[in-house]
Amino acid sequence: MHEGLLNFWYAVEHAATLGASPLQVTLLERQFILYRDGSGAVKAALDRCPHRGASFRTGWVEAGCLRCPYHGWFFEGDGRCTRIPADQPGVPIPAQARLSMLPVVEASGFVWIFPGDAAMADPCQIPAFPELGADGWRAVSGSYRWDANFSRVVESGLDTSHAPFVHKPFFIHRDDAAVAPIEVGEDERSASCLVRTKPPKRLGLLKYIVKRDRDYSSSRLTCYFPNVNRIAIDFNWKGYQYIYFASNIPLSATETLTKWIGVRNFLPQRWADRNSVRNTVDTYQEDRIVVESQDKSLSWDRAQRDLLLSSDQLILAYRKRMTALLDQR
Image (tube, rainbow, N blue to C red; front, side):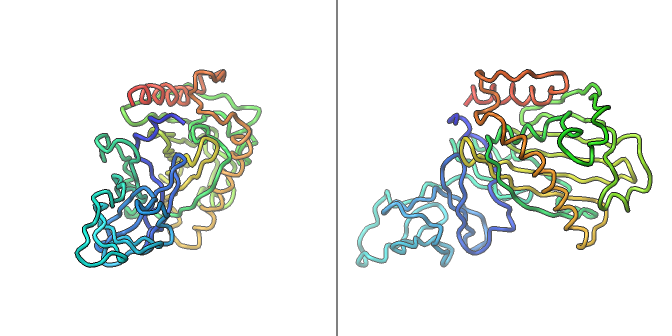
């Protein structure tokens, strides 16, 4: 894939998943190691020991240092090797004995790494998720994989017209599926639009929290470049919302791993979590069938011949912006 894709922040793991042991992640066909130092701060490095190229996946953290599982070398949080057990006392440690460290930030419920030029790693580009952890919001999370290019996965979350044909709760609207005119808003790091649709069937928990049929429901669809979807669903009933925040991680040109967090401001009890997770996973399963059938190259590749319409304005904005951003990188 395009080398310029390295010069973005990527949410590669749920922050709560990273505990005391090192954790290997894959991004853009490269392996990286995440770990927490003695103070609990997150560190990230290329997953390759400079000694013999071993992975740190089965290593450990000791006295705040990352230990190599092959020969036990100690690495400080800045990447320097400070002890080689096989050497006699007083033997100098080679200057090349250091890890390739990456900029890393823990924010919005995720661990974010910047695998490209560190001088371009502005943490202000990481999107906020203010509802996460706020009073009145209950969170669930999960992950799933796609045999698809990440750009196609992102675009499935920007598509304003597929629901009546892909998602079962909307099937009743297949004969009345016209999309109202939309207005796309853009800034340097995102593109979004507000979509009003005929409401889905009141299935699952919606039967109990939404007491009557409504004229419409609405969704704010947002993409944070290059790979994050935020879908804020407003049920048009007492302010109830469900917000889906997902990092679609490009493992390779043809494989994507989605790590997601969903928050709701209704039914805060733990017993309702299962329904929130099931609804999210069911939506993924429905989308996956179609998305995995699409071309696996980057969607904005000029060789593509997709015929985009007025209902595809948000997808078009995403493609144009990604083309421009990559030209700059």
